[in-house]
Amino acid sequence: MKNDIDMLHGTIGDKLMKFALPLAATGILQQLFNAADIAVVGRFVGKNAMAAVGSNSPVIALILSLFTGISIGANVVISNLIGQRHSDRVKKAVHTALLFALTGGICFAVICELFSRQILSRMSIPEEVFDMALLYFRVYVAGMPVILLYDFSSAVFRSHGNTKTPLICLLTSGIINVLLNLFFVIVLKMTVDGVALATVISNLISSALLIFFLMREESDIRFSFRNLRFDRSLLSRMVAIGLPAGVQGMVFAVSNIIIQSSINKLGSDVMAASSAAFNIEIFAYYILNSFGQACTTFIGQNYGAGKPERCIRASRIAFAQDLIVTVTMSLLILLAGRPLLGIFNSDPAVAAVGIIRLRYVLLSEGINVVIEIISGCMRGYGRSFVPAVICTAGICGVRISWVYTAFRRDPTFPTLLKAYPLSWTATALALIVAYIVMRRRTMKDFFESANTSEPS
Image (cartoon, rainbow, N blue to C red; front, side, top):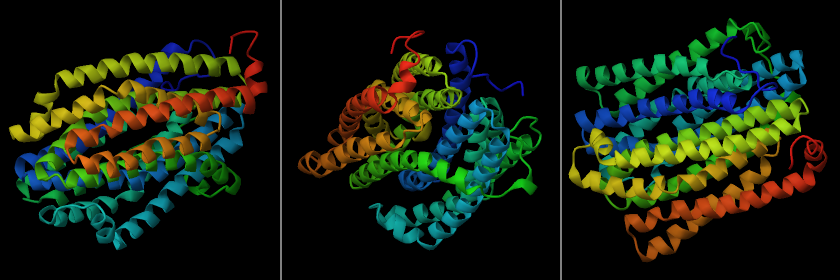
């Protein structure tokens, strides 16, 4: 397809940008549409409804992170096979990944519906917000199968160098999502269940569009319903690579749940402000994360093709590009912080608290670049266990310790927010050491073969 990028030949910098920017735009658009949920209920229902939707974000992220990680594993496996030019195994891997997404989504949707009250009761959600939070959660998780199908279908396209098609599908479904939000809440007088239902419908549309385009593919990633079956060896590889990545994402989500539970104890104003700020600051994260995913795919294909010099160059270029774009974007968002917060809620108290969070998080995003690029590189090489362990200790460990020590002594919002830069710094330093060790020991032969063309 014309949207595919040849990662095995030619220049690297421009191709990384062509891959990463649509991916970043996809994440940003997805977040814009998620933010529309909060903005609509904040404006037309009230700040308790806004807090109810926002309080769901960490626990939903926790549930989705496991499968998102395995979709990364699928991306790496398919990328490696494309680099090795194993056409038949590429086809089997594509169908294995999509079948796993569908069956896994159904299983987790049933589990979450059965234990929804018990799950949310762990979140320290205030009584006046809990019923609406529970309603939103139950409607949202009912759409788990189509949400995961979109994620895995997107991973299939990314493995082949195509990030534009998922972007187009998301843009189409996202516009429908916003229109449905307004229709359900303003016309039908629904509350949080309206915006959750709109999200489920839009995810159904986006996943259906991606499956349609995969069925029209002329390459090895072409999809056919009659070929849907599991290949155990390929699924095992996807899980082996993706599960640690999923654990890494879950660690972020667990630490955010701990932070969110502490935020919930500070009152509805802080809950609403933090929710609004999160939906703004996350734009910078999607940019830095897109270059990490670009690293994973570029290195995955070139590692499979036995091209260490391109792996080395891709990691260096991705880091430089990511740092420049992320820091610039973070500063721009921070400068426009108050007007952006006003979109979600016009209460001055909410805006004042929200700007505090934006400062702590956005001014530290440059550190997070190190985490995303190194983790992305190591996953591309198939070494995803080590970054998962490091992030577990660095992210979750530091934040839990901070909440139960420093925050307990001084239970204020600024004190709580210091957990973000501290945990990122500790994790980044540990990942740098791990990456150096990996290059010198576990993959010495692979990297040394590039010495004649590129210094290590």
